[in-house]
Length: 241
Image (cartoon, rainbow, N blue to C red; front, side):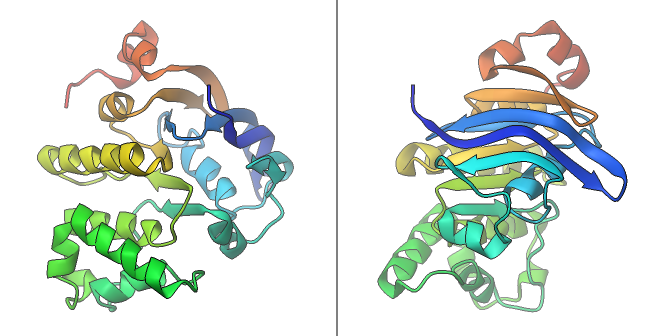
C-alpha cells in the first residue's frame, strides 16, 4: 500500500461562530482517486477549501507529504503541488482560453516544462487548443469545465482537488470528462480528491470514498464496497446515470 500523500487529523473549520467541520480525519494515498460524498451542506466543499488554503482551520492538522501545511497561504500550497478546480469553474470570462491556462502556471518558472504541460493539456482537451484565442466566457459549460481542470493541471500538481466537475453537464459529457480524469490518474499518477453529487459516477471512478453528513465523516470504504452498500444506495444512488 502506498504511503499517505495527504492527511487530515481532527480538522475543524468555522464560519464565524458556526462550526462546519467537526473534527474530521481522512487519508489520501499517492496515486489514489478518493471521492467525498454527501448531501449539500455536508462539508465537502469546506474540506477542499481548507486543504487548498482558502479556509484556515480553527483546530486540527492538515499534512501534505508528511509536513503540516494548514498555516500556509494558498499560493504556497500551489507551489508544493496542490491545485483545485473549484465548484462553478471560476474561469476568467474576459480572458482568452490560453490566458486562463497560463494563469494556472503562475507559480512556475520552468518555461520548457510549462510548454510541455500546455501541449499535454491540449492533447487531453483538444477543444482548448482549437479555441485558444476565444474568450473563456463564450465557451459552453462543458468546455469551461475542461478549462477549469486544464488550468489546475497547468500548476503541475501532485494532487488535484475537483469540486463538482459534472455540475450542469449532460450525461455524455460527464462520462467523457470522467474518462479523462481516469486517464490523467493512470498515466501521470496524479492523485485526485473528488467532490461530486453524481455519486455513482464518482464511485465508478474512485478507488476509495468517504461519506460526510453535517460536517462529520460517517463512513469510509473502497469505492466498490460503497457502491454495493444498501445505506449508500438508498441515500445517494437512487437514480442511475
